[in-house]
Image (cartoon, rainbow, N blue to C red; front, side, top):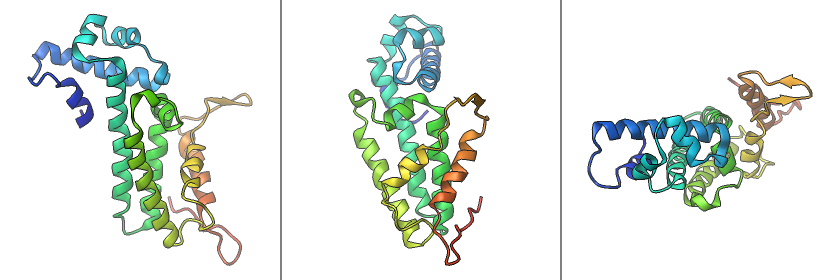
Length: 208
């Protein structure tokens, strides 16, 4: 478990008993699953039902559903931010950017809750400070890649997160069903479009 969730669940200052710890683990797994599937529309009853505990047990372990969801989302956003920062240390600016882009799109594609928050919902969860840190890291990552001439210099850095978000597929379109790896396939198209045009008028190939 990551730090934000640990801090929330250990707020009483003493380690929980073994049976309480099992309840905590079930609640956490249930909340993550519900958040991934239903986004911010998840309810306390849904989380408690999935965890196999009563509402009383849920509220004894966490101050509110919002606090639990916020802690889970903080951990995921921090994971994205950490990946962007580590990408800045990659000696290959393009490879570092691609590695970050894959994490960014994979996490958004796998969690409706994360996708909701990064799309502007969930202001009541007070995640803006974490999102601002992510923005700063992405801006640095994009500008480094542009200075290395591996991302088009006619793009504003703000264009890039929007472009990456378009790789997240709908489940269906015009009667077709998305493949299980559709986000990867979409991302390759997006990455190709971010590459500069060569002197011969062709895109630099995506090395992945």
